[in-house]
Image (tube, rainbow, N blue to C red; front, side, top):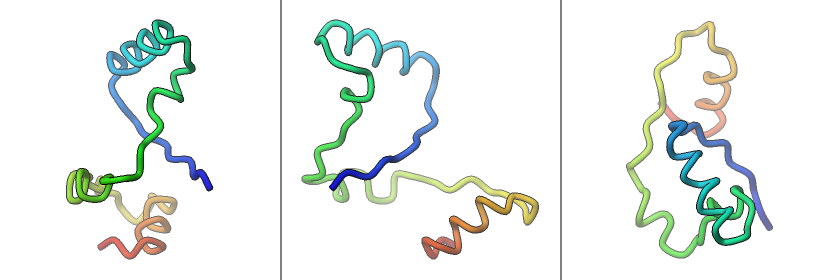
Length: 69
C-alpha cells in the first residue's frame, strides 16, 4: 500500500530532481519514492514541526492527530 507525503523543498532541489528524472527516463515523483527499509533509522529525529499560532487550525489539527506537542 502506498501513501502520499507532501514535502516542501528548495527550488534548486526540484530542478535537480527533474533533471535526474529526464536523464533516467522517469517521472520526477519516481525519483523521490522511498525505500522503507531503514527509513526510520535514517530519518528519526531529523524533521521539525514549524511553530504555528492558534490561528493555524490545520497545523493544530495535524499536531493533535499525530500527538506532537
